[in-house]
Length: 141
Image (cartoon, rainbow, N blue to C red):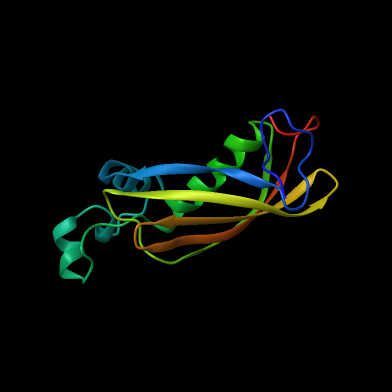
């Protein structure tokens, strides 16, 4: 199993994508919630989040979904087309933490790859998912 690098031909099953570290800031959490029109108070109001049992505000699933998609398209290039993104959340992303996304190509069908993605933070596994992506002709950018 190798690592996929920019300039490589089409990926192979077992290829690993390089990790992506994302700093989890209060601004990222709030901006993601606003951008996805998720006005739940637990994503922007720390006091109300604490009243509901959370130590702080936390990232919403739509922001995580977008970050997983970004991880794939940042790697495979702007011509890559996300066909399907399926994720499951685990440990919350709180401000001040770092989430590290990693991925591995699980399968290929022509120019379409299935990539297993996980994202871990300081308290555990935040996201587990599978992304189906069509890779541009010529391979990884």
